[in-house]
Length: 496
Ligand SMILES: Cc1ncc(COP(=O)(O)O)c(C=O)c1O
Image (tube, rainbow, N blue to C red; front, side, top):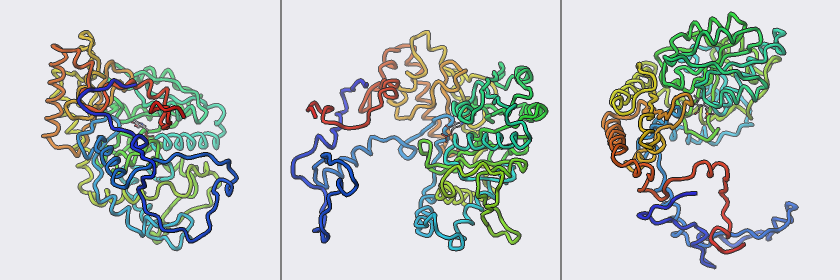
């Protein structure tokens, strides 16, 4: 699956370090009778093989493995669309406070007023930042937020007797793959709307697609091309005139925080990736938070229960929700994400929140301007929080966007997103985020420029990159298609 590089020795698996009888922990004598676990739980006994190593060997093994990791805390991580910003450590300190971390989800509401205040505090901020009337923090990922919004849209059309007739969801050709997937999962037929030559939604194509079968249009703003959708108000008007709803994929909210509000653009609902914009940890599809915001006409359908403030401002769960789509996650979503997001929001403070989007946009435009002569932007106009460049001209030298990205690893940088959005040939999508300084951006741009120069004289070197890592070029398709993460003796050449 991977080509090996010579300079770096391959780490051995913990099982390969096993020596019979070595032990890494010191357990006290059992003071209760021994129980055969397998028979106690009604399972057949199977031999489980444990690695046998000393405590120090174990510690070194995992410490050395951890040094092979690359993350935002080791270097620049410009993965476009993913907003890999630095999550301040204070977030973890507050989330670790025992008053939050040790709460039990089944504790009576009357014993957790502080926790409810945290959730309501995030709701207050998000309403103000997005311009929506109500928030739910039940969805645990961005895609889950998309799905939940579409469930609300469906319930809304059903309440108006149009549930069966409105069966189509429109999605731009630049959209993230989760958009059509969410629509299909919700039972909708997906139709694609093309992007025009300037990188905006093709309004004529949209006009042709709009009829009384359309339930919703899912729009990412700024789009995945890193461009603000200039006709967004018009788009919302057009969709509404046809009786449809407009969903905002808010994964790119980092470009808008404190500057402009999707709720004011005409959207009916949106999702937010708290793990992108509001500095909570990323987690593959969760445990994150894909909070959603809705306008008041969709409020009755929100996942139950809904946290609202009473006349005195105290947060209380509203459970009498006859039109609700029901729960979309257990309890109230990922509560500790709310703690982290509120910490982040309070640490910034209302006045400084616009700094997020201003510096995110400034940094992306700086990178785009520095690289323009080597990797031209897919659409030559000011970008928002990320820029999409094309490496198409290097293709004739036999060098592709992926080769450039792999060479970046040898320069000590994490590659940007490749080949997304799909409509840009040889796309390199760079999202620097607001937390990077000019020196880092310059070093990154210098590395990319050096790689582009190298492509002209030594394209083979790029195709062979990376050469500085524990593994060389990975066969990424095989890694996805033949996923096998289980250790067996077979792997080390000894049959099981
Ligand atoms: C534009 C866009 N929409 C939606 C998503 C889905 O978010 P999540 O990964 O949290 O499910 C992403 C994730 O990268 C995205 O970039």
